[in-house]
Structure formats: C-alpha cells, structure tokens
Length: 113
Image (cartoon, rainbow, N blue to C red; front, side, top):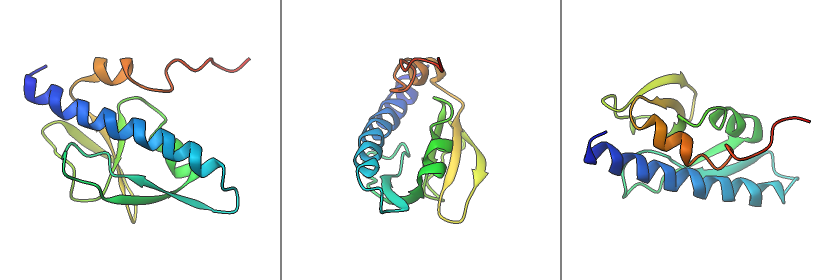
C-alpha cells in the first residue's frame, strides 16, 4: 500500500469510528427514525452529513471495506461504487483492505450465540 493510500484509509477509518459513536448516541433516541452521520470519504476537510435510517447504516457497516459517502465524493482510484441511493453512496475500498479489517470497530464483536 502506498503512503498516499495509507493516509486516505486512515481518514476513512477515523470517520467510521466517529459514526459508530454517533450510531450509539442515535440508539438513545428511539423516537427518531433517522440519524445524522459523517461522510466517510477520504477528504480530510469534508464534514458533510448523511441522514440514514438504522437499516441503511447497518448495511453500510456490513463489511469492514464498505463506507458511506455523499455522491460526488467517491475516488474511483481507491474504491468502487457498489450501491447508489438517493442521498448517499456505498463504496467498497479497493486498497488498504487489511488496515480496514484490522481497525473495524465491529470485528471484535462476538458472533451470534
């Protein structure tokens, strides 16, 4: 992985960690059908919000290499669009897969009993 790819992945990893915390906070507000999350693009200056339902967020968290972005924020040299929705995209990173797996906050969760 190049140094540039590593930097991009680290930014995405940071936003994923923040979104996991936002999801926990959103769970404390059961009256709301949606929650605001941060765009998980590789742009360190991006703080765009994406409004998602719990199901949409869980779909984005389905694999450690999948991230949610505002349309137009994708970088096809490091990711591919796997789903297009009205107000967001799901992309799969094509670089830094090991780093993304190792830092996935959900990878340490125990499986179903």
